[in-house]
Amino acid sequence: MSKRNRAAFLLLTLLALTGLCGCMRAPAPTAPNVPTPQTATPAPTPEPTPTPNVEGLRVMFYTTEIQTDFTIWVDDPIDLTVQVMPLTLQGLKVDWESGNPDILKVENTDEYAVHIECIDDGSLPKSCTLTLRCAAYEKTLTVYCRPAKTQ
Image (cartoon, rainbow, N blue to C red; front, side, top):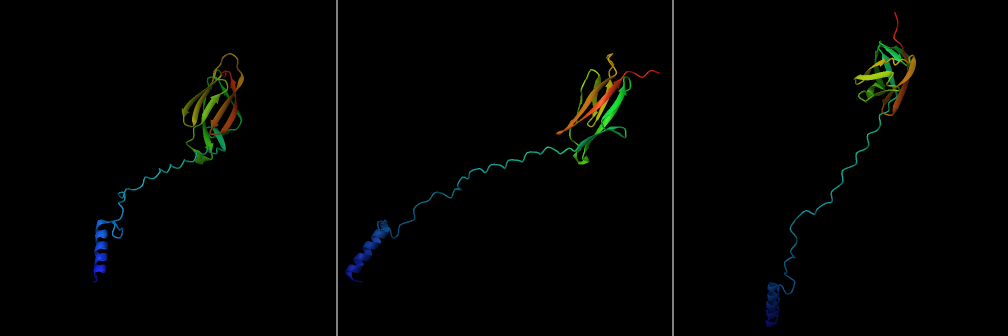
């Protein structure tokens, strides 16, 4: 090797060892392998619970369905039950409301049953409404309240 080549070789080696030439430079330091923070994905918004599609309310006195109206007498209260239609919707709350609580007293006895009675305030005979509500469905019956039966 000639003096010139040797000098060039030594110069390059020296430069390489000192890192001045960039030919043997170590890679630039990098940040530690830390996972990049991810923005939190928002939880999906739950779908609103749909209003159940109540198709009807069957009001029953024992095994007889009351369609529109019925008569009761003072001192002869009755118990009524209701079926939510379709029957697959059982478990829904049914609200019963008297149109005249001074005359027609309504008392819940079960989830789907009520005890009703007429109160004689001296103005009987009189008619009142009995309204049932379940979900968005409403049914109104007419109740004819009569004075006590005489024997």
